[in-house]
Structures are given as C-alpha cells and as structure tokens.
Length: 331
Image 1 (tube, helix red, strand yellow):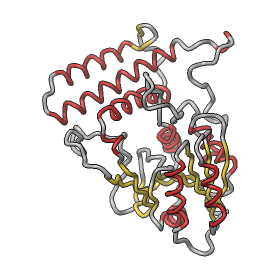
Image 2 (cartoon, helix red, strand yellow):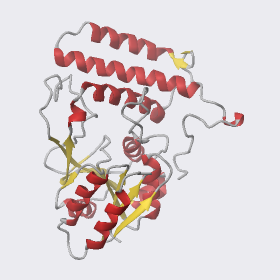
Image 3 (cartoon, rainbow, N blue to C red):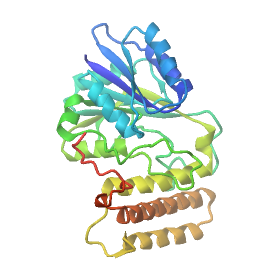
Image 4 (spheres, one colour):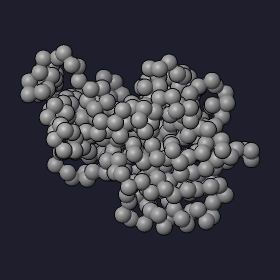
C-alpha cells in the first residue's frame, strides 16, 4: 500500500460525508494504491452508518475503526497502528479536499528526500470577516483560523505545519513515536466552564521531527480548503481558543525546573500576565486591542495549566493524574 489517508472524527457525520465525497473525486495515477481510514472517536451520532454507505460505493478501500479512548491523539495513534500505507496522510473531518490532493501528497515524497510534508491550507469564509480580526501585520491573529501558506513553490520548512494537511513516512513513527496523548482535542463542550487544553499534537510532532534534523517539505499543490463557520468568527471562540492553547503549550513544552515559583507556578508567568494586561488596558485601536486581549488569555491559560500540573494527584495515591504521563515513544 503506497498511501493511507487518515481522518479522525467525533460527532460530525454530516461533515465527514462531505470529505468522503471529495475523496471519491480524487484524480490519482492508476498504479497508486491507497486507502482511507475513518477513526471514530466515540461518536454518538450516525457516523458509522454513514461511513458504511461510502464503503459500498467506493473505488478504493475505506475502513471504519472505532476508538473508545476519548482524545484525538488516541485516535491518531490507533490509525497509525492499523494503517497499511508507507506514507500516512492526515486531514480533518470538516474540510474540502482538492481533487489532486492525494496525488500531490504522494508525489512530494517521490520528488524530495524528506520525512514529512505540510500542505497548503486556505481558509474559506462562509460568513463576513469581522472588522476586529487582523489578518496581517503585528496584530495578526493566527492559529484559531486554520491557514497555512508559504507561496507557490515547494520549500524546506523550519516551522511546524498543521494537522489538517500533513503527511509523514511510516518510518517517522517507528523512529520518533506517535502523537502525545496529553495533547490534542478531547471532545469537550464549547460551553464548559474552563476550556480544556486543545490542539498541539500536530505541532509537537512536527517540532520533534524537525528538531531531530529530518526534512519537512511544504507542498503548495497538496491543497486543502478549511471553512470558516459562524462560530469561528465570534470573539468568545477566539478567547477560548487562545486560553486552551496556552494550556496545551505548557503540556507540550513543560516548565523549567529551576524557575522560582509561586503556588507551583513559575513567577515569570505572572510578570508576563501583568505586562500583557497593561498592554491591553492601554491599547485603544479596535484590532490591536483584541489582539492584545488574546495574548492575555494565552498567558492566563499557561498559568492555569502550570498550576494544574503542579498540584495533580500523585499516581501513588491511587488517583488518576490530571495530565496523562505517557512517554513520547510509548505508543
């Protein structure tokens, strides 16, 4: 098997159907053997039945796999284990896929001696773009909107791509392990009181591979379109996203052992929080002010997660730790 397409999903039956429709329309060389794995991460909707209808009419193998352990990284690691391709390509369950995407992903590994690929992601606005949302300049708001553009020519990357459009040779996971299960979405509700740590599993993997000296190539031809729905244009969404990303950042990077602390939190974090509060309080430009506020939420999320890590129950006490402690290579 040349290539496996991996899509993890959670209660998005209507969206995953659109992605599978796009994959049915892929234009690929006749000698390219490829498959699609749908990893259902505890969905309670009709995801399974919907995928099975696509299996019956597909010209390529589609496999439905149920992963009961909640968390996208668990689902991703299961997909790695169950897949058969020498190249593993990952995308999301809420995107639109260019008809040449599978072919472009495969060809980049034939053209370049690389271990991974990050493809182009274009945001598609289904609603008007808010006036307060800065798309460029020093106040540019990144991350919460999934975009990844590095021009029209392939190039070597020194920074991580996004999980909505990435691929790796199977040997990457054999050498460096799978996705960190302490990171990634956990299917929490948008309306929960304190947002859980989210995302970061893709960035951490990219960073790990790049720091090991492996080559990651940007492919402009491997194109994914990521819709921007109404929910993603609300200030509440951005504030929650940056808060939870701050929590994920701490899980990914950890805390310096020798930093002076207060209640288990490095003191410098409080200085950063105060500095960002002052910047926000004395900024009056609409776009700049909201950008500063998001950085404030990012710092607050880091403090909350640092406190949680410092006060998590000891495994010896028989209580489950707040943050899983799996080693990177133990998958």
